[in-house]
Every structure is written in C-alpha cells, then in structure tokens.
Image (cartoon, rainbow, N blue to C red; front, side):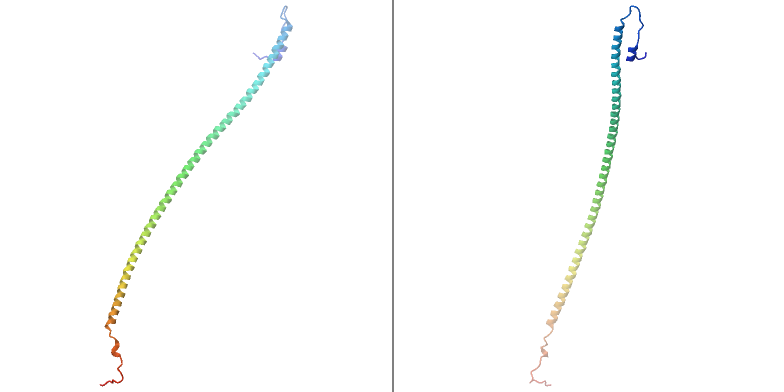
Length: 171
C-alpha cells in the first residue's frame, strides 16, 4: 500500500451516487484530515531530521569516547613505561652507588693497610735509629772515657820545666 500525501487526500474525488453522502461535509472532513496529515508529515520530517542530528551527535560522541579511551590507554601505557624506566634507572643508580661504595671501601681498606705498613716501617726505622744512636752515644762515651783515662795517665809536663839559672848542669 502506497502512502497518501496530504495533497492526494485533498485532490481525491469520490464517485457520486444518488442519496449519497453530503459532499460539503466530505470535502470539509477531507480538508481537515489533509491538514492533520500535513502537520503529521511536517512533524515527522522534523523528527526524522532531529533523529538524524541526534544520530550524528551520538556518532560524534562515540568517536570522542573511542578517542578518549584510546588516549587513556595510551596514557596508561606511557605511565607504565615511564614507571618501568624510572625503576630501571633507579636500579642502575642503586647498583652504581653500591659498586662505587664497594670500590671506595676497598680503596679505603687498601690505603689503610698501606698506612699501617708505613707506620710499622717507620716504627722499625725509629727503633733502628734509636739503637744506632744508643750505640753511637755508647761509643762516644767510651771514646770520652778513654780520652779521660788517657788524660789522667799523662803526667804533667813539669819535668820539662826550666831549671833556675844558677844551677848548671854538672855533669
């Protein structure tokens, strides 16, 4: 069945019969129906336009929603990637700090051992120097003692003194 338009309703003519329906009343009723139908058609066209507009708007909203979801997923992945990179970098920094502290501790212990060895060697040198100095002092003491003894042993040179002039050597 084809759809009737308001114009078709207005233009439609009925066949006439004897003792039929009042033509003015029929015409008036058809005009009323045509107006109602025209109003419904306009309303229907407006609603269809509104439906299309809402469908387009809905499609735009769905597209925005899809874009937002994609953006959110991308942001979440980026956040996870940043977090993973930060954790990896933190682990590297911690490892470097640990390695550095190990090297520093090793170097410090090695230097400490070298210093202790040097101190020990200096103490040995000091002890040796003290012993040598002690021996030298003892040797000097012996030389001084010997020299005193020699001084004591030596007689005064009084026998070399002059005899008075009147005494002549007889002899």
